[in-house]
Image (tube, rainbow, N blue to C red):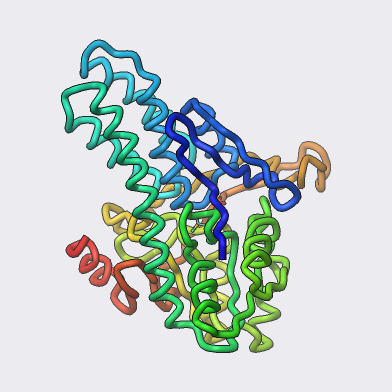
Length: 346
Ligand code: MRU
């Protein structure tokens, strides 16, 4: 199948598919300024942890190309401002900070400014290519866990759009279908910003995979009726003990899955794992504007002035996770040891 291209490097600018306009319109934006790309990340025009990492790397490359510096010291000083601005867009996705750290290291390694700029562009393209390969590999590992005839419940959107690659949760489902397995998907709408209703259904429809849209609160109904073979979700950040931050509502699904004896899988490239954080308690949770809850597409659904909470992610403790599927293999049981083992190999 032809995958959506949410991000593309065009030599001196970046083309992104504006995900806020989907599924009604397929609108591409060409951005040649890192501030515009940073705003696009903040506004979820580009979203999903791996795609945020790739976009962040390209934003640094754009920023670097625009710096006019006489010395390497001046260049690095300006670049610090660029990296800080991009890092301030979305705090939870580990991939963003992983990518920024890589870009920073490349910037420091070379003396010549022009060569540094070229190296930063190359590094961003490399990060993009590696993300693509990693999501293909993890999808292959994950597809082995999918049985013929399974209905898979997924939350938010963890497809090609979210990864600038093959997808994580949806990549596994797409791969299982390519292997000839009959699969169906229950997609939660994912309030407040409806990534499931708008994006997951759009991608699965294009891939020819049967999908049924449900509201977030219907998940328990279908699980209890025995209609869910497994749950697969993506991740925004995974701590060293396996605790996982993902879209708000993931924790609820994990607890419900345990209650109903349904395997609950997390799929993510190793760039989403943050080995420096000992548990999910340390993962920063993005708090977004309350208006995303009180309004849908600009229309108010609550009385004016009502208080509303909007944490964008929650933490699923590792004990609810049946396996973490990465491009380096599937981790089960003792996540602390499994993650350490993977990082020894990385
Ligand atoms: O707020 P979003 O849309 O960026 O949140 C996305 C998610 O929570 C995804 O599940 C996660 O980033 C994994 S994407 C492969």
